[in-house]
Image 1 (cartoon, rainbow, N blue to C red):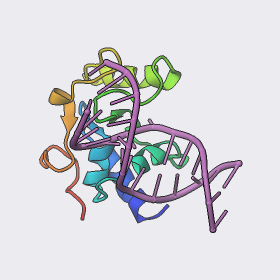
Image 2 (tube, chains in turn brown, yellow, red; image 1 turned 45 degrees about the vertical axis):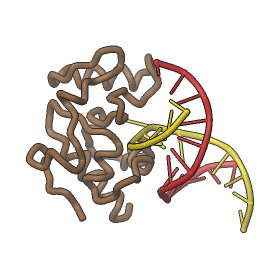
Image 3 (cartoon, rainbow, N blue to C red; image 1 turned 30 degrees about the vertical axis):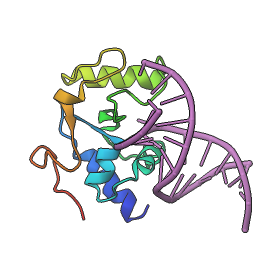
Image 4 (tube, chains in turn red, purple, cyan; image 1 turned 90 degrees about the vertical axis):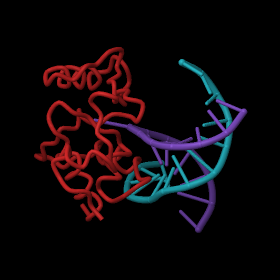
Length: 114
DNA sequence: TACTTGACCGTAT
DNA sequence: CATACGGCCAAGT
């Protein structure tokens, strides 16, 4: 659990309800541009007890990253729709719900890091 | 030490 | 829409 990890978890936790962000946007917000893979890796090993809105993280295309039809895929779709986010064919229109890591400063629940 | 993997990304064809 | 490529890099073999 180093500083980069902390910052990434913080960025994920800062995505407002009803909005989503891509792995790359999370990394950029955490002050780690180009490190999208690190975000994906961390989401697969969230410390026990830590609660995160993991379902608000999508690929840059707006698609859910998990395999279509898998349990995680269905759970993520359900959680997103529950807060008003449109999910059609495993995809969310980022034009309407997506947050950018560099822009959208007023929408994030935290200031840009680094 | 060397090579492979993977909830990824942007650009190019 | 689909493939390819180079970037990224911590973990696992």
